[in-house]
Image (cartoon, rainbow, N blue to C red; front, side):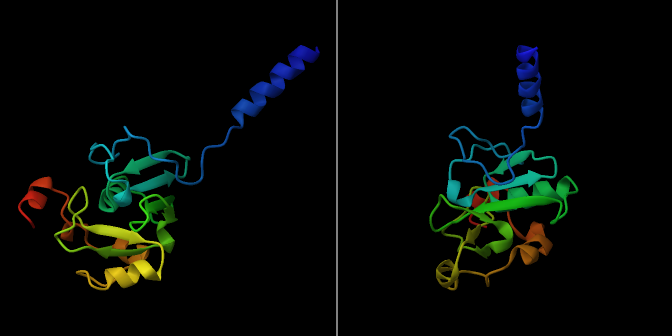
Length: 158
């Protein structure tokens, strides 16, 4: 009886295992859920955790946004995280981040040039860049066709 109770409790605990509510570390072979490229430059990365706790990893902030829009996700129906460009290894809740488009001489994996900063120091760096800093709500509403996701455009310097 005691063994049966132990097994039952173990099964119940396994069934109640919760999924992560936040970002998980990037692994060396992780691929973008949108474009399938290996995430090789982590400072441009993003992660999305949907309402079921499924985690999707992205090589570029714009890949994450395009994926969310294409799958009918709302800004409030998932949790979005972006890597702090300055550190390259600290996740930020996208709603707390400051987004900027870097000059074309520095481009992201999918050529959007959109990067995230955690704090005002990053925003000060970004002040010399192409656009004014945006919040996540502004970036979410932005016309994503304005940002390149075509590697041929990146190669052509567009």
